Image (cartoon, rainbow, N blue to C red; front, side):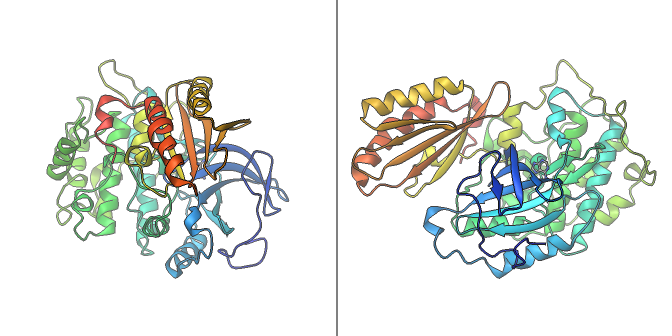
Length: 435
Ligand code: ADE
């Protein structure tokens, strides 16, 4: 229940900015950052009264919408459906809170982290892949039976609980995301269409249930193969492979699993297997009714020297968590962008500070990064650097539009932005897939 007793979407009071140790709505104490979703930051927090761990997803509304954001009835309805649903393989949504600038989704905390982060070292056995696929399908079936479709199933949405069981997150929030996007808030989705069904790519009308089945098929393939079924350095080739359902199974995959996958990854949604048919498939049914928890021995990772496993960059970019479209396309009203860099925090900050000093901007070093300000203008750029992995950081660039637009736009466009672009971590292939 909402602490204020108000509707889950009513504006309420929160801290100005989420920082570790601060309290939200007098109720949740923020502890650490868990990650960056497609359109938000996620924090671990504790309910101050009960000590219960929760995950809080924070969505920033853009400056232009700060005043008078009226949540849409569709979002409200979607959220109230989500809050009532309870399934062992779906992350619970406890409550939704909002201020005039932010929306906070308070969710069940999945202690085991992202399932796919376990795949950076190799692949899962066929049995374990099937076990996770079974858990995923029961979650998907549960939601479909209630008229809720994910439409955006991908690695970042698959988490593990303390017993290494699957927990799907963000289910049913896709309508919220759509709404946020069409409202013009932040988040241009970028990345590859690796998990997206061909009928969605072709932008024809599509059946949400069939599209979810496709994404589950891609996920199953990755679990056992350790690489993506549809992948190519060239985006057009990748689209072609998806449209044609063209994928190569690894040598260790059983013929039964290959047959099953060919039914799930059928590019024609009409002939593609349905969730009910999946539940009756002989490959799927193996071990389905056994109530077994996943043991440490089973959570085994198989490595092959000649297979290019997913790396941190794949995981980040495929899950659309990186948005550098603003840096590349220079939209006029950008307020926040993120990119991944392989440079050290000190190097990133030093390079930008150097440019800023030449341009006579006022540089203020902060705990979280650096703030640059035009001497006589409203021009402000804030650079936050967050550690992502041992090798990578996420740089968040927040920019405030200037009154003195001409001059500051020039500094941004000609000086700061080119320097930031040099810091972006991109492989040759991935440059082509940035929108
Ligand atoms: N990352 C995103 N959502 C999460 C959750 N609910 N629990 C743990 N980590 C998360």
